[in-house]
Length: 68
Image (cartoon, rainbow, N blue to C red; front, side, top):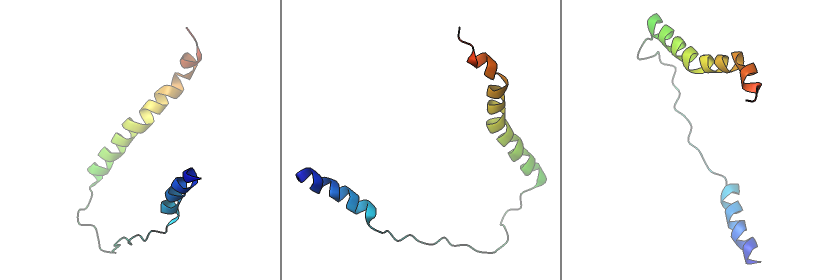
């Protein structure tokens, strides 16, 4: 019976409603204008870090399926 009392305390904390603050959103223009070169660098970085490893795995999938 005491085990139920202990676990009910865990549920009570999760079921309690919490108030969250709203984000301050403004419609002002950006403080720093991002140039075309910075866009290119960001896109290349994303391509290299995300798409290259997954492309490598997909291109070598048949090699990974073989068991030595």
